[in-house]
Image 1: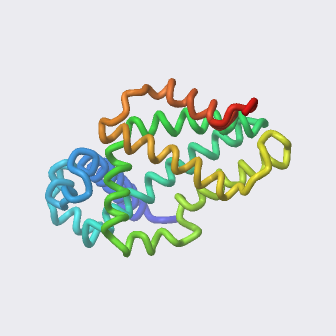
Image 2: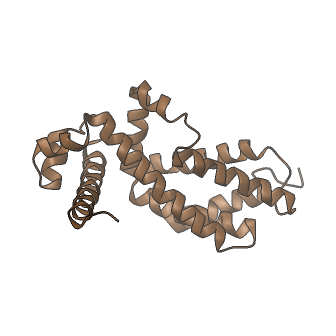
Length: 206
């Protein structure tokens, strides 16, 4: 069992990392990827810049930390949703609703993260790991579509392609919200996406 001093040290470090995660997320939401600086994160967190550097060597490491923690939150949320439903169709409905709520709230952060990926090849390379929580989330959605097809709830198609389209729809909507180019509310957009998934866009009498 760790000594009391070691447990205290671990607790302080966990609290500091949590504070830096919140601070970095806030700075990225307000200033975007180009505006993410160690100075701004330190000021937002109420610590010295040296303290930030004690945990992260540069802003790429900092944004990777934000990406990973955000993905872990999403992974946990999806696990809870999937475990609470027998129906794959109902599971997809709740995922759409909850994800849109989160993306509406954190749309600017998501846009900043996408910007970082576009500009930093190192981040894209690190994302190739199948064990990263974002990739585990993708696999959870892919498996959900595959299971729904096996149960006869969904049309037969490539579940990986469906997962890609599904994720692209959600990401595209969040970017338009963040850019102020979409004035449709979360509930209405959720209903629209579910309708689109259920019915498609081509009239059946055509």
